[in-house]
Length: 268
Image (tube, rainbow, N blue to C red; front, side, top):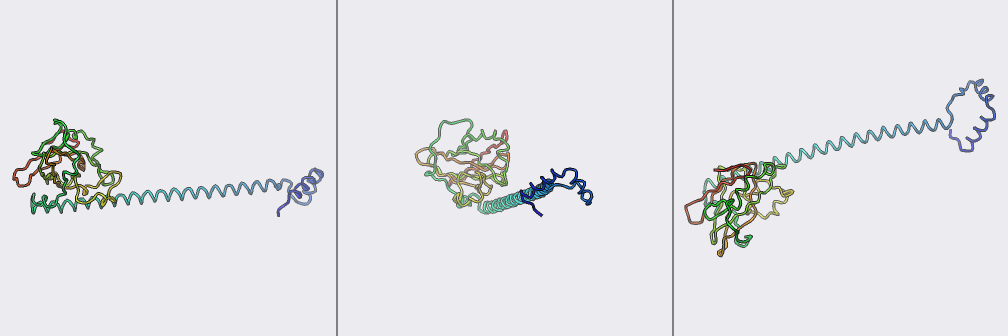
């Protein structure tokens, strides 16, 4: 039963007037004088409701933590599967290129390697430097300085790698083929030019990180006729190593080799 404010006021007046007599009368009728008042009953109900709400809130919090943990686990599993797929694609692409190279040799790369033409050059070349590594008509600019690249810059992040900048300069008028040698294995890729537009790899690239298969095993450089021509970009390198490259000129049997250090003190 619920009482209005007016009813409660009347009850309190009667209690004040009757005093102990009322108490005695209540006792005579078998009613406990210590029975809770209306206010105490309302306070008890409120406390119970607050406790129920707190219990419900704790349950919601536990459910939220469980959902967050499940989401994190699903995200980790998805990233791991994606990284496995990227590694498998790396291996498949490398195997296909190695087979073509074994069957046709250098001729395969003259036919299939992407071309970096004079029009895409970034200019000429500055002063010679002891940090350059030369292989015939090609210079790998400041290549020796990459011996100091930090190991963490060569480690994968979710199966992808940072591109290490390394300029290339080609003597005026030359058309040179640069090939990654088999002894380097599939642990590096050339990024000076690629066979497909970069937009086609958009889903594979995140935060300037690339799977190795975006890189190429070989690139053709076409220098401008008037001056030694430099080209930008670089390589993808999976861990500290010496990347072994070979330089060829069209119509010549001779080849030049270059061993480029990345995170290692010296290369043969």
